[in-house]
Every structure is written in C-alpha cells, then in structure tokens.
Length: 250
Ligand code: SAH
Image (cartoon, rainbow, N blue to C red; front, side, top):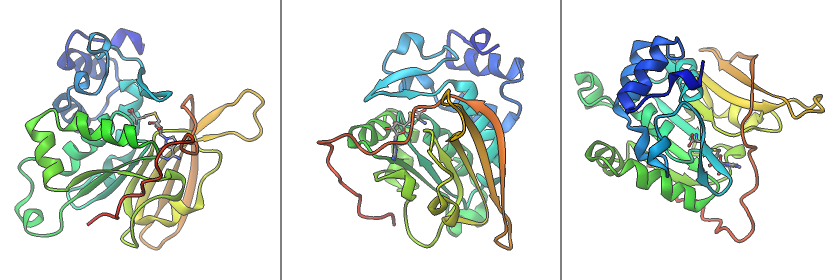
C-alpha cells in the first residue's frame, strides 16, 4: 500500500496517501500539501515516493505515511497556542508540517494578540540541525516562520527533552528510544501527548513499537503501546561533533 501511494508531485503524493487511507484527516492532508517534500530530500527525484530517504549522518527522512501517522496522533495537541517539540528533526520536514498546523498564515485574531504556537526541532548532530533550518528556509513561508522564532532548530540530546518549565503540548520523537524516557513525560503539559518509538527490551529481533503517552488535565499519565515500527535509534552524538547546546528558547 505504501509504495502505491507514491506520486509525481507533492500534490500527487499527498492525494494518493489520502485516497489509500494513509492520511485520514483533511487537516493533515492540507498541511502536508503545503510542505513540498522535495525541499527536504537530498535526492529530489525520489522525493515523491512513499519511502524513507537517506539525508546523511546515518539518518533518514521517514516515509510520508509514517509522518502522517505521527501528525494524526498528535493532531488534537497541535493548536494555535501549542508548544511542540520535534526530537530528531533530521530533514526538518515534520517540524515544518507541525508549523503549518499550529502556526496558520491566517490565525485566529485572539491568538494573534496573545501567546502564539512554538515549534522546536531538536537534533543531537549540529549538521542536521542546520539541515532542517536550511530546508525550511527554502520557501518564503518557512523563512517567515524562522524569522519570527515561532519555529527554531536547536542542538541537544533529545533523551533529556528541551527547554524550560513551560513544557510541551506535543512531543514527537523521530528515532527509537531504549526506554520511555521519564524526562520527556515530565516535560509534557497537562494535557499533553508524547509520540515515541521504543525498543522492546524482551525482543531478540530488535522489535520496536510506537508508544503514545497522554497526560490529562490533572496530571494523570496513561501509556499505550501501538503498532510495530522500524526507526533508527536515539543515540549519543558521534565523537567529534560539537556539543553546542543552544542558548535556550525565547
Ligand atoms: N523526523 C526526521 C527523522 C530523522 S531520522 C525526518 O523525517 O527527517 C532520526 C533523527 O534522530 C536523526 O536525524 C538523528 O540525528 C536524530 N537523533 C538520534 N539520536 C538523537 C538524540 N539523542 N537527540 C536528538 N536527536 C537524535
């Protein structure tokens, strides 16, 4: 099904994913239409395939249907005042899709006046932090979001989360964790949702599953194991990579 959803243009790819039920939400479809995957894939000729693509540093941009799953799961938390953390932002594609949902061009007037959404892409490899930002800056819309600091790309170890006590409405993790890191759960707002692939410690075959962790208004936490997946692991930054922890977010 995944491969059948490929297209010859961004519009064709997203239309096919929608037709085949791999994108279910019209809102998610609209957001993915606005983010041209060719701006985030080093090899533009395969940008519209529903498959992962290498982006260097042993990382990949995930397949579009996987991105759609993640966005649809987090959708109730991607509102116009949301604080969204995209751990393992890699190409920056998903960070850009989150921004399309949480920072619409014509936002609600009451939100325009108050605190606006923030989307942070977090990478432990500085070159990939730069890649995400560079890819996003390829369009005037992306540059505007970066200039306004509504979207930022930062360097740090995603296993520790990011930022101050404000916490996050939605945390997406784009690489497999060895455990359900408590620090990420602690950084969820009430309510908030964490979407994270986790390695199964009992599996001899390196099985991984998506876990969805919800914190409700009263701070109660519910953890749910979803479907099996295959992601690259969350790791230490490779030796020799600068440990440039960015200077916090405004
Ligand atoms: N969502 C990205 C996925 C990139 S692959 C995309 O679709 O483009 C996973 C990413 O996780 C890689 O870019 C890798 O550098 C990053 N990563 C691995 N370990 C990490 C860690 N400890 N902290 C932050 N990012 C990490």
